[in-house]
Amino acid sequence: MTEHYLGVIGIAEALGVSRHAVHKWRSRYPSDSSHPFPEPDVDIDGAPGWRPPRLDEIVQWREGLPGRGAGGGRPPASRQDYLREAVAHGLTRDEALRALDTFAEEFPEMTEADVCAWLVDHWRS
Image (tube, rainbow, N blue to C red; front, top):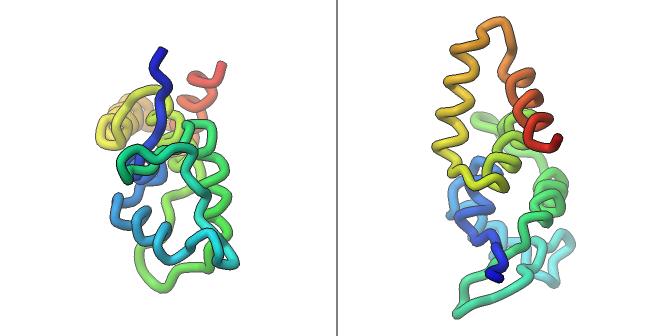
């Protein structure tokens, strides 16, 4: 049976960032740094891979980074949770965001955080 791993692109999609950001984190925070990026579970021809359950560890690592400057910022926690679950269930980041937009249009009385929480609860149940 084939085992599924998340590569740099999968991690990036789950966190709502570019793959360049993940590469940058890995190079800026090596294993000997004070805040090392989680080591991959597997390396295939130089391509790292992490088991999907380790997304939580990577999210916690990211939350421990120093705050960002002006502009941008992290997506809200509810959206991050939703994107992690969506990727774990086989959606790409773009597909997950389109689905989120569709739900938001269908249920205008719900906030985005409410929609994200409902979808995450649905997947986890």
